[in-house]
Amino acid sequence: MNYEVYEQLQKIRKKHGPQEFGRICQVLLELTFREVGFRTRGRPVERPDISAERGPDSYAVEVKAPSGTSISIDRDDLDGLKDFENKGINPVIAVLAFTSNPSWLLLNARKLKPGKHNITALRLYSLSELGQEIDRAFPHVLTKYFDVAMTKKSRGLWEKLV
Image 1 (cartoon, rainbow, N blue to C red):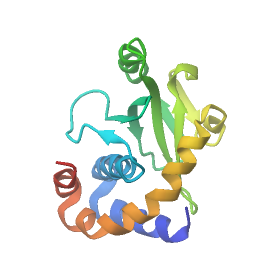
Image 2: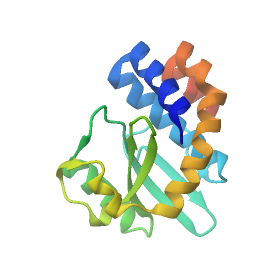
Image 3: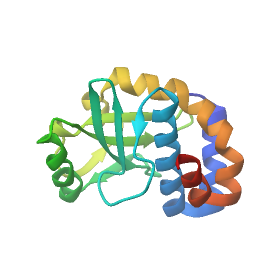
Image 4: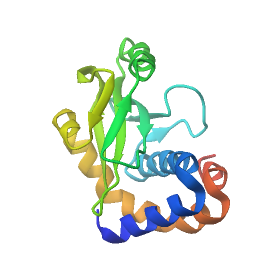
């Protein structure tokens, strides 16, 4: 991605605060999955944040949008994904690396342990092909829905998923 994406995300976070920013990023990520051909559930529920399927590939995704250089991954996050893994669905923790050159890290949750992690170090567990595909499409999705995110917040974005 690029600095323009960073500036747009920064404006959203500054206007709405960290909690709503996280919700907005979650919906933007789901819209991005759709952009690259995945079917998604399209409604907010407990777990997972996003269910995405395309052909034989199925993912259960928990989304994290931290504001610093580290992220806490809770036991509940990982345990909640284990139920899906038992059904043949790939468990993923999606982390927005929010730097001047933002990117989505789609992490293999099977390899993660609970605790506080440096975001850069988590790249070791990245599903890099999927992450690159999402990163290529995300700037377009963000630009397309930026005004909705700024004016109607996550609620307005959820309406785009129905």
